[in-house]
Image 1 (cartoon, rainbow, N blue to C red):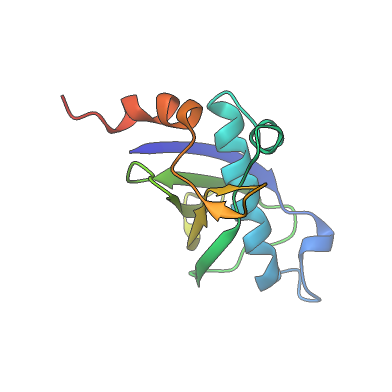
Image 2 (image 1 turned 90 degrees about the vertical axis):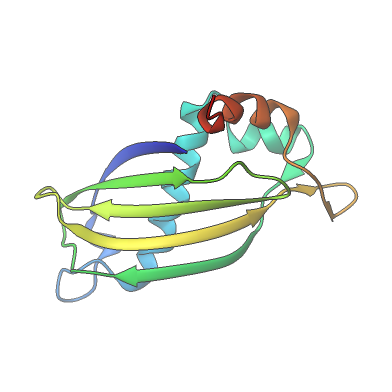
Length: 137
C-alpha cells in the first residue's frame, strides 16, 4: 500500500452560496491528490504524457460525510491499495483541520498508449517506484 497526504485550503470559488464546498469540487481535490502523489514519487503527469502514456478516469465514486467550508485547511489522503496492472485505483480520504472525515472517494484510471489509443500495462518506471510499497517480504 502507498499513501500520500497533501493539504489544500478551500478557496471561495470552490464553495456554494452557503460557504460549503460545492459537491462538484471534490473530483478536483481527487485530481490534486493523485497528481501530487505522483509528483512525490518522482514523476509528473506531464512526463508520463511525454512518454506516450495517458491515464483517463474510467470510474469514480464519491461519498460526502460532513461539510467542508470556505477557508478550511483540508488534508487529501490518496491511497493506492494494490499494485496496478493496466488499471490503477486511487482511494481518497479528505479530512478537515479537526481530523474529521469530510469525504471519501475512489477513482479508477487506465494506462493508455496515446498513439495506439489502447490500454497497456503499468509503465516500467511507475512499477519500479511502486513495487517496494507492495512487497510483503
